[in-house]
Image (cartoon, one colour):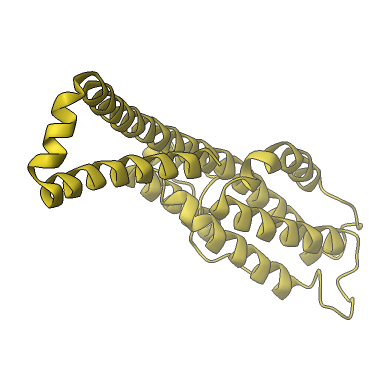
Length: 220
């Protein structure tokens, strides 16, 4: 709403300036004489236009900085949730692949559900984060179904291959958020994610938390 008001104000000021310039050119001396005879009005109008234009420019710059800072903050929060999603995905797939383990909801999945409730409001306000949130919800539904031993449902929710597809979709939706980080940090995030998939650990090399990452295909 505020953004629309700023744009409307900018259009009004720009239209007023263009109108005055065109009138001055078209009407010539008669138009200039009128303004010359009304010095106070001329001064007030010119000052208001200058102040209005300056205020709108300053406000737009401030709004841009706030949006940029908020976008990085949302990406950082998404990174935390994504790391928890990876842990929950690995815990559930490990449980499903081991027949000796009884069906139960892993602690990692409970933690993901709890933290997602906290992060959802801020993620929902951002278009890219909203898509990421949607994919996370679908992944969680599949993980809970698999953890409760319902992997043979007709709709396929909870099957191992379906879990992998859901995790891949989460990773793909997280990629736009990763792109908001500085290039060096983007590389560290993706390297950490690749290390998770390959079963290696890069913590000793670059200090990256191997629980977070993005953009690499999930292992089945």
